[in-house]
Amino acid sequence: MTSRWILHVDLDQFLASVELGRHPELAGLPVIVGGNGDPAEARKVVTCASYQAREFGVHAGMPLRTAARRCPDAAFLPSDPATYDAASEQVMGLLRDIGHPLEVWGWDEAYISAPAEEGTADPGELAEQIRTVISSATGLSCSVGISDNKQRAKVATGFAKPGGVYTLTESNWMTVMGDRPVDALWGVGTKTAKKLAALDITTVWQLAHTDAELLTSAFGPRTGLWLLLLANGGGDDTVSSEPWVPRSRSHAITFPEDLTDRVEMDSALTELANRALSEVVAAGRIVTRVAVTVRSATFHTRTKIRKLDEATTDADMVAAAALRVLDLFELDRPVRLLGVRLELRMPG
Image 1 (cartoon, rainbow, N blue to C red):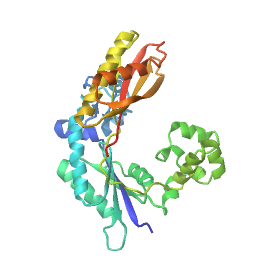
Image 2 (image 1 turned 30 degrees about the vertical axis):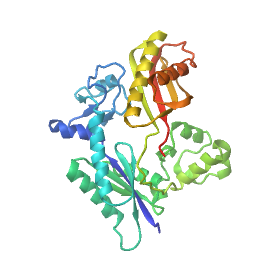
Image 3 (image 1 turned 180 degrees about the vertical axis):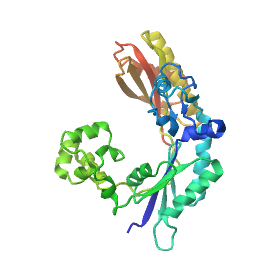
């Protein structure tokens, strides 16, 4: 018997739902959020698609132009991060007021830890309370996965969507998950799944019953044993209620036309560095390392990072550091995207 329940709360189609709150006339229609809301805009991608749009094969990360071809009758809306920040803060405030430890994971996800001792609330009842509180106060829908660790609770939420509650525990884990592909596990991506397939391991059941020595020899001791733990329904059961402190600030731009001129690259990189730094200064933080990402016209993407000689918020020093990092790249192909990430000194 578990001593604590872990509930994973995931807001359904969050950005689209926030927009539908502002545009109720679009209810029931496919809604696509991204870029400036212009589906003809070059090299902009979908940030969020409503469930109706997803039925046409539209998904986050898809170019807006592709989304428009698949779902020409969709309503395209511009992304509005400030509004999403405010909506997320309201939801997380409501969850904190429930009184259990809360760990926030970005705009639309959080974990709640609740005791499982006799006399405490049933986790299903708590999940329904969460859904009701969020819906009544904000009009937003959420799904809740229940388990005894974060990873299993996250998987459970996938079965709860949209707008439901689902419980995964040791008693039903293998019945539900055993025949599913290994990438149904949270944290197992395409590359890992391919590597497992090369070992003739394609299902969760097979992975759960694989010899640990084989996995550690293929993936290393840490990753190999973690994969075995995940397949058996294990995971991390710690919910930290410490305030989330950003470790970095970043900005990137995909150019309407590929850049080949170094002067233009330097200008764009300097602007990105200044934008990120302005957010760092506003937050009262200080920069310790500067990273630059370059994506070529062939989609080859690399990131390089260097530590500053001394932590700073000086704009000239940060921009100069970014340009020095750019010097480390062989810029022999047209550049499709540039990005800057400023890593920060942690408080305390």
